[in-house]
Image (cartoon, rainbow, N blue to C red; front, top):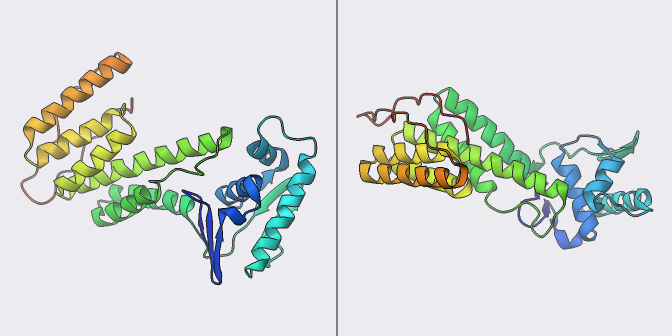
Amino acid sequence: MRISLIGRVRVEFDDGVLDETQLLGRQGRLFFAYLVAENARPVPRDELAEALWGETPPATWEKALTVLASKLRRVLAHHGVTDPSLLTAAFGCYRLELPDGTWVDVLEATSAADIAESALGKDDLDRARERASLASSLLQRPFLPGEDGTWVEAKRRELSDLRERALAILADANLRAGDAPAAVSAAEQLISLAPLRESGYRLLMEAQAAAGNRAEALAVYERCRQLLAHDLGAYPHRRPMRPIARSSRCRSPSPRPPRR
């Protein structure tokens, strides 16, 4: 199976596609998405109810969860997923354990960002760029668009932070590899996503300097200074930019200042 929770909820099987409109309505979509995103964690029934209905679930919420679970089992069985251990209810929890080899976009993005970070630490720049680019690409669209609620909003923030991390890795890896234009592009995307993150401006300044655009680098600094002063009453850290290597690879960066 291939499961997408970013953008429209979608499940691809060998024999066809299950669209979110076939997932038993709004509660069915949230029920499925929550269990998938929790990656086989046993989820307490009351936690699941709060994700579906907020702090004031209906009086019959326990029965409603049982009905949703039964309908989900039938939908999956219709597409050949019949293992009774896939969706279980025990000890007051629901647990969805997907078949081996199932691809899930939010889990794949998390794994890709972690691999990219590890690869960057080992100076495996090609691997870092490939995985960071994948993570950023997967996370471009919103999580469960049209939904709200505490859990959905928290998950969106988590995935936004993950995309920020992937873009920072991508910009840094491109800068170290000597691909200044690609570093500029990644840093600009990072700033667009997190305009108060000082490290994004620093990456963009270094990328512009590496591309030979010193005036642009100074303009980025001034833009950062004005934004931080206006919104936070703070100023950028005055730390010299890393020297630009003459070869195709740049020196590894020194530690970045804390995120603001």
